[in-house]
Length: 257
Length: 65
Image 1 (tube, helix red, strand yellow):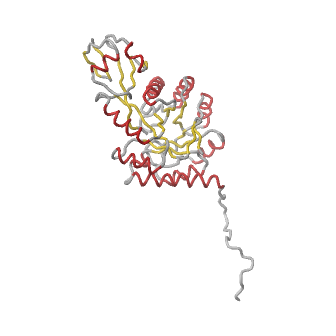
Image 2 (image 1 turned 180 degrees about the vertical axis):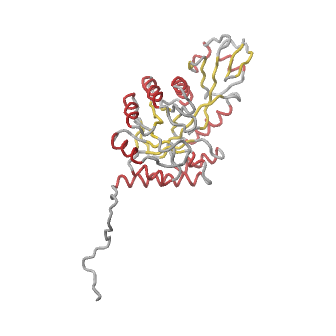
Image 3 (image 1 turned 90 degrees about the vertical axis):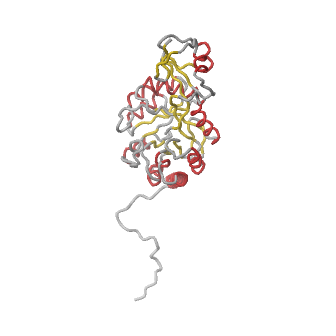
């Protein structure tokens, strides 16, 4: 069981709701994945509230917990205000905190991130910070009040998969008791399995599912891959060896010549 | 009076934030509002008076990653 800010979850797959071909395909993907947490956002409403209302209704019908984000925020004040507005709309203290530092790589501005996390945690938010795999930044985030960390494994939407396994491994070892969720950069199920095998607690995905030829089928594939990686970590894996080791016992083998 | 609603300058006569929402035909319980960079809770909209050049943000749920 995964516990995030006191909330117990069976599924270790968090799913974004953007970029699907249609709302019904999004709904299918959520159901196929068995995901219990979806990320959502806020935008300016121009049609008298009706556009957002239709999306809100869809999410309500899915019966899943929402994790609002501060996507697209480049400053601390913007991110903090967006978080407060998200709490007003979605009625949750959960916030996926993004403070973007660079428009090409979408990498987090980790300085602003720590500052915003401290402000939001002091105002009762339960912060899920989108961060890098930098250990010192992660320590600052924990000091700021974050009880979950969400390092990227590659740039958002890049589908590159884990680019720095050693850093992810170090982070896991350094924070044995903090739930760690890989957020951003996963492209295929094997990437998700890889990070789960490292002992990560969950994976947050969006583009890899939404952009697949068959998003619902891909959601199911990811759910299996994540569960497989987690089970493998729990089971304890063999370390690679340089030499062959026979798997069939040689004692008692017949001698024919 | 000139109000900047979601980045667009408009000539409007609303005295309060809730009047503004009604005038612009916003509906639903899923909107979040801010005036000049400060959140205005749903319950406070009727008491939040507006002045010339106020910047109002009206946000609603959207898909996100």
